[in-house]
Length: 249
Ligand code: ADE
Image 1 (cartoon, rainbow, N blue to C red):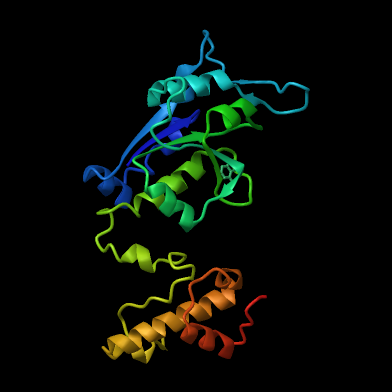
Image 2: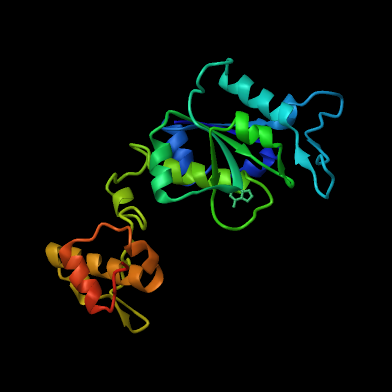
């Protein structure tokens, strides 16, 4: 997977990709990340990248030309040709980023991420350059940079070979539409609080059953909205009903 990130603030990406899983994923050749400064593609002595909005009002708008030029140059886009992968505009108006979207994006060889700033980007970027628009949540950030970092992180850990244990991503919170069960490690008792007995039993089937139930319980308590879309077995449903769950509809 290759990520191209287009931003006015390349320094923001400084160390975030230089540690831990993303660093190792780059070193092992699973991902490469290129940060492109949109300003380098702006014209004139002052390399201006923003301008006042037509129609008046406050704030500044990112100009279209430097963004088109940056993306078209880096991706080698030719008129009439399909781009080598999705061109994603990060904005609070996009479709919501979820684990399902992360899996979807992980299927591509190359992703371009355009970080919006100021009051917004010229609408023509959205209409005629971007092929997708993504928001990481219903709140407004000062720009798309942090959203791009979130997407690179969430997608990278799904790529084959990146995590030591490939099954881990399948057990993640949200992977199966549920929150994950609690985790414990040594010591078996800490400040008088004991680890649930069943986890010490060595009985794999019992452990699996306990984990499934705690995952269901936690999801019901914290994110009951997820249950409507989760894959539930008849046993899951019986257990949830015992906890007072009432399926919608
Ligand atoms: N830019 C500003 N807010 C954003 C959000 N919530 N998601 C993605 N990009 C953004």
